[in-house]
Length: 315
Length: 54
Image (cartoon, rainbow over all chains, first blue to last red; front, top):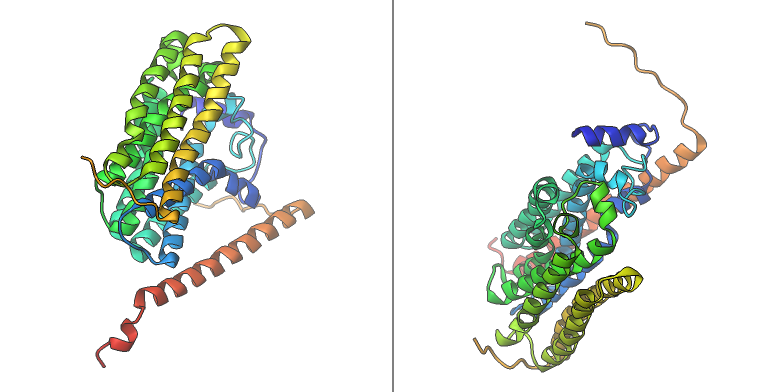
């Protein structure tokens, strides 16, 4: 436990072990993040070539969701010290003193092992291996290492959030191929502009917690420039599933329109740099980025459900 | 080496309610796991039960 972690626990209300409410344990799982994980994993599953029994698909989604939640619990265990000083996170169960650190750690580890075991035993080993790696990547590589040491934390750490469609895909096919890598790349490239938009108007929080987010260490202008660069890179990548034959015309149409709107938002963030309008632009872009990812993957799902044929692989 | 005796105290009504809620959630989770393993076994067995070597 770091010195800062110890200090934050001294300021939290005194509590005893075993007093946590089920709601607190649920909060450790980061339910909102979990819902996006379930959705993108489902999209990966439905876009994958091949079939899966509906019950097995349900079990796979449940295991992926619990695995994602487990990594959230491990993240909250390790980050309790910085969560305590950030406005956005100070009401979480650990900094608020509703749960003990050991309880969060035990909960996270139990669910991690359980979710990987269930996925491996009831679905397939490939999906379980990627889930295990995802949990390790988020809890150890991102949370324990990158988050506090580099401004590239969410660029590399974003991979953790990009794995779920790959796990869903592997649950169907038993492996990894270009189609699932394309879905991974979309989320991977989407994550930096999404989080940097948030960090633009939450940078005081990050500075107080000593987290080297890009606006804190490189300044707002550089962050706006990076948001624009990653947004430009995201546009062609978002069409990769169509080029690979995973998606069809509806996906291309929806993604193209959304891509234009995403670029407009990124340009707004880049151009409007002063005062309240700048904060509004960043907040709008952050909100739209969530809608963007949701609709891109929804297009993939709708196409498959409607049985609309893809173009066939172009590359 | 003797350890200091552990002190016990009566839980408050609020703490008892929370403990009960935790117990109920755990019961549902365990029941859910049992159902999940049962149906997954059936699904994985599929038609193979009828074709097995006797």
